[in-house]
Image (tube, rainbow, N blue to C red):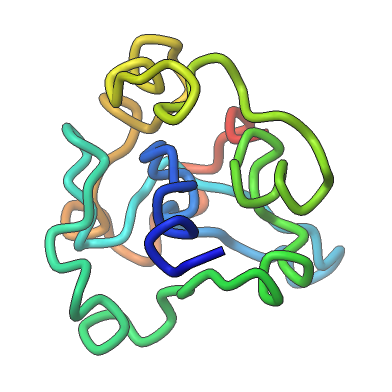
Length: 133
């Protein structure tokens, strides 16, 4: 798969851009509804994709090898589905032919997330959600 083909697998849901917290006692991972400061929560697009790793050092640049290691990737993530040998969902832009279906299906973080620019680190636990599955 070429790098362009790999990049096209991204459905634009924005779930991987949500801040995740790890419980100190149980080591359980929790998603929050707080996004990386670079994510535009209305479009689910990165505001500085080319420089994201410089601006946000802990941003994950997905690769086929890394996908198999990341257990936290949402079950709807195309990278995960492909790794698991499953089909893409009907709303995936490569299937539907429309980049809006991921939002219309309610799968993206559009209108459900807020930028970390608007949330203090101390209040992050208040934003724990159970919807990215």
